[in-house]
Length: 87
Image 1: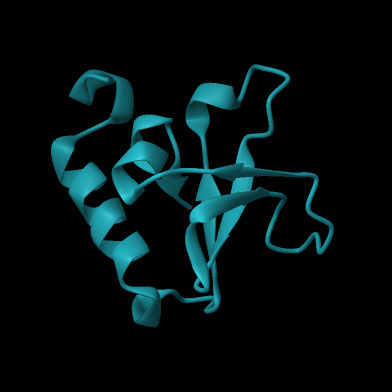
Image 2: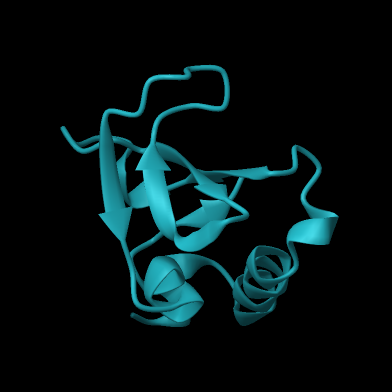
């Protein structure tokens, strides 16, 4: 993935730092994510991380208690590489 695909290297680093530090999450224990690459596709574009499992993206909104699908990643970098950003 190139920086152009994501936004900026600075934004990517800020998102990585936020994901790695759940104490900073404004909606702890949840961190809302969005995936702009998925906006015009059939794939879910919104998800949340749980502080207990920070490499597991639950595909749902913050206000929807029902998880539709789960995507598990090996690392924070893998989450970001797939297009997820902190919302």
